Length: 305
Image (tube, rainbow, N blue to C red; front, side):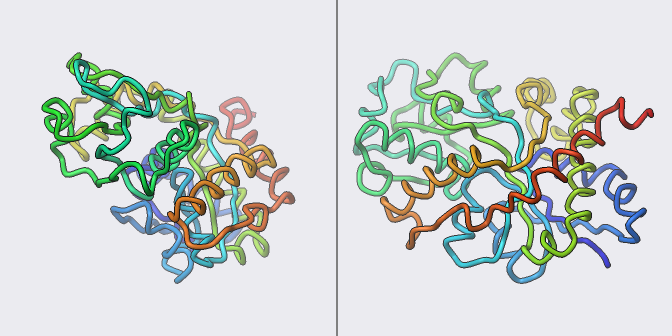
């Protein structure tokens, strides 16, 4: 069997895993091989799992909810620790927006369908506003900093190196820090048949992912240089962004399910998903212990023993 793992630039754990040999090393004792499928848009992860293009993938918090709402038969496998400094909703430093309520009637640029939708929808909901009715959501076009500075848009959700670069200019204020509103975890999910029939394969993938995270944490300059060369931006900004990530995986627990259910309920209420979903339906409690053991097995001490 060849296990196909989806990779896109927005998931740093998978991004680095695809450049290392860890997955092949972990799967070989099980008699399996690995293949990476690269694609640009992380929101395609659910459909790619559903049609068999990939067996395992990872995104932020929103795509698995939309995938479940679309009827795709997926299950959660592991999540990252919270990423409170991963992103922020920026407004012009000298502009008219001073609170979430001031966004009403304005345009916010964000990665629609990504974790950024979760951030904005929940922040608006907390202030009695609707993602559907009270703001206009637009996808990034590459000129967000300029448009925000001159008032053409009300807000911009930035992340990673672009956020580090924006912070350096002094032209923006952080209206919302990600950790003020959501936990913003990386979320890893798989086809249900793989997780149910071959939990040892899922555990091996998680071990490899955690090893890749340890590598990134131990080699920040090299990881930043790779990202800058491949994705653009300054290596120093990438290093700042990567240093803000926890580089630690955890099982998908009932606490995480509650976080996702809150998001799913908001999404359904504002029409972002067409039907209500019960997040617990794609949570496998029996995976929690194997995933916890897989994370522990990836620790540098464990590998030395």
